[in-house]
Amino acid sequence: MSRVKGGTVTHAAHKKILKAAKGYRGSKHLLFKTAKEQVLRSWRYSYVSRRKVKSDYRKLWIRRINAACRENGLSYSALMGALKKQGIAINRKMLSEMAIHDALAFKALCDSAKQA
Image (cartoon, rainbow, N blue to C red):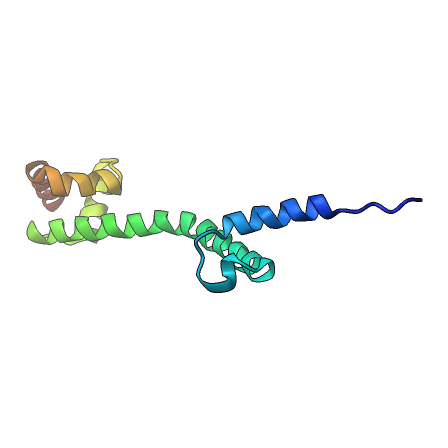
């Protein structure tokens, strides 16, 4: 059986990794081994961060709602509990937007929550 040289395939794979490592500092964009390590790590970071950003936004919305509730003499948990009791289904993103852009409507929600 004849020998098959895999130079072109290897060269293409190395080129792909080095292209992905473009702009990295030091030898991480020059040497294949260090570039591969950094690219794999970068891909892992971006994978995790794509999932983490969702919880970060939720935390931000909750903080904004809580701050607006406190201005209206209510706590976040009390507002959410009252809304659930009344059967008002509005998500945290929209509540946060209301708190920022439509303070009167948010105040009306808070008032109805206080009565419940």
